[in-house]
Amino acid sequence: MSNLRIGQGYDVHRLIQDRKLIIGGCEIKYPFGLFGHSDADVLTHAITDAILGACAMGDMGTHFPDTDDKWKGADSLEMLSEVCAMIKKNGFRVVNVDSTVVAQAPKLAPYIFSMRRNIAEAIGIPVEDVSVKATTEEKLGFTGKYEGIAAHGIALCEKI
Image 1 (spheres, rainbow, N blue to C red):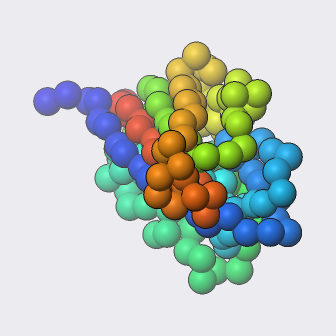
Image 2: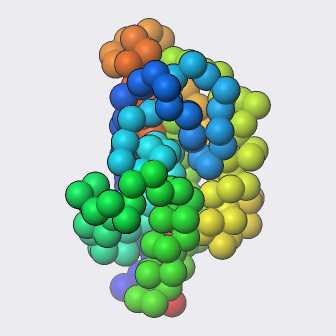
């Protein structure tokens, strides 16, 4: 039996006015932000769910319910760090993460390395073990119509 486990995460938030846009722990200059109970960091949420999934420990809603005011406006990188401490207590560690942000705009290329660094630091792994990519949907669907932003995350975890 292998000690390696793969988890997949997906998150989506709609774009709204008068809110900061936070993706991968980076504040991105843009006229819209993402709606959510916490800071609505769609990328960090997808990665957090991927890690929880790999360790069969539920999802973000289980650990950080949007009905709990404790998490209102919460920093998603801190939530990710908390999840990594939880999985460590259960005998797991994150090996690597791969992720994709789906957004028609803004352009994310200038922020990718900072996102990778922020996520790696929150998880406690080298930046070389964190991949962040960005793509558009060629103006198709809700992301292509500037209605929201989505993210996919995959995590490889090891039972130690």
